Length: 415
Image (cartoon, rainbow, N blue to C red; front, top):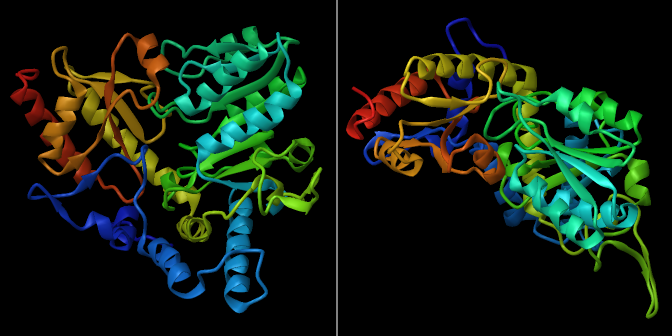
């Protein structure tokens, strides 16, 4: 896609997103809640619909035309995902319902088979609950020890503290690539290198990075990486786990049932080869096919172009929010992803602020963003969050800033 100098990326794509062309409370919708879930282009919606209208049948199990067409589209989508993150093979892509399930898969399969009491797992304080709770459950069951890297004073990954926590007892490092609250970008390639040097495995939560920047799992070098489709223009109910083939081969199944078997006897079963060993039962077929369409769509635009445009947007938004001294902003002031968590002056609750902005047709997130430990660490109960995607515009940011200032005046937090 080639843009003229007077057109931004959003101008070229907004017509692809039906949901953006509506009014909320009498105002044009401004959707700034993309870190929670992205909107879907018409081509993705249509691919999901076409499966149910034309090809609805189960995959891998039929000899008839509908099943063959569904299977082909389902597996083609897997190949697209593999290429999108530069996996070595489509066998390294496991379909899951979401990133949470993908992390639980690793915890239950690899974790329960390879960890023992006294082994250590390193996480960060800024992890999403999905990358904390599964490891807590594992710790309670096996007696492994969880250690947490705090953010720096600037709101970034503390590489020095991470190095201090690494030891010969460290067996796993599981870290977020982009914090959904601080917006900082963790140095995942260096984290992986340091972890591998002491023999630890590495899992990367890439939910906030895969939709927004080029990702190359071979360059990162990680052992596993997880992402959710609904944050990258695909439907809900579909995500994926990337895992290095030799590690996935050695892991036992997570769930048992149909599809993940080779042979079943009354006293034992043998299991299917990758990736099907980890995909028990009828999968989310239409959603997986639509995920493939989303990958096609993002690839056509170009992930470098998406990242560069979002960097322009977030710099523009950050500059305007920094000019409002009454706001408390969280995370680094530069070199950050396209989201900003913030709070108004004391006495103005983030939920009330979000509700008032909604009256102006502006959708933002408020609450703890599934990062309660981080909010406690920061000494706050919650925050508001504006998060951007490539279909957002500077004009929307201007409207948001005006509405935000008006809301602060309304609550008595801005003179």
